[in-house]
Length: 147
Image (tube, rainbow, N blue to C red):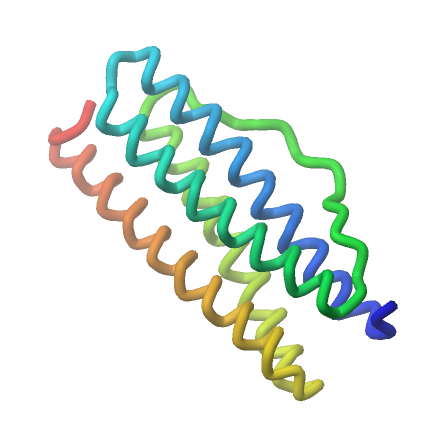
């Protein structure tokens, strides 16, 4: 069993966050699909797959370190009543992830755990990319390109 409770906490929080994102993005993907927006549903499904990859990588690291890979209770899904509202909700979720991964990465650098630090830093870059995508989508909506 790994003896650093703070690192265990970061990994567990990160796993919980990724699984919550999977649940939320999957529900939103299904909802926009029901609204007849097949392309957007497919894009959201890609986000689901990316978040699943993050969860798998975190679980693998937890196993290597001997940390039980059980996520905490997932928060309720927030679907939104429009595409714009969905993107705004997801933007908040991504900002939370960015803050978590920045903090966790800095902590790992301080304790000289380069492997876990690298994992957090890589996922952080993905989350920064997701935030940029959400911002582009919100700008398209404001320009009237997406309803």
